[in-house]
Image 1 (cartoon, rainbow, N blue to C red):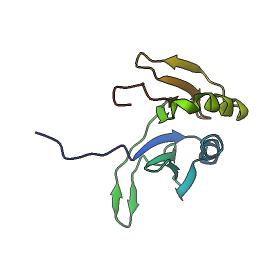
Image 2: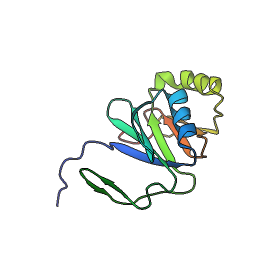
Image 3: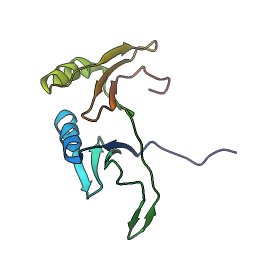
Image 4: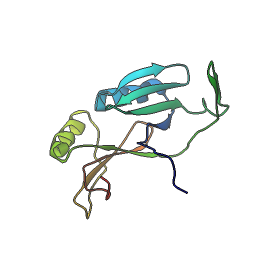
Length: 139
């Protein structure tokens, strides 16, 4: 059986202790703008088609009723991971920008397909990767 067309990952979630602190980090370091905010979460626009959802830890465990229906419960604990795609030409600029923002690069990895990844931590300890093309066969 062939699955119907799927175009991309639309959103991903991180679960944070202090919503305002996490929002400030992603706005300051990455320039993401909020597109929705409520008592449980902040949705941040990532480039043209993606959204980063920052949920207050524990705020999603019971699910959420909306005018359009019920959002099922979800959550995550520990140090989660996400990766943002960057052009290879902006790698050095990102290294300089992270340093200027006081964000330590925890690791730098060169991949066999030619890509390079920079790893850092957000205020909740989540692993944030910035990767150039050449990480995967499809990127």
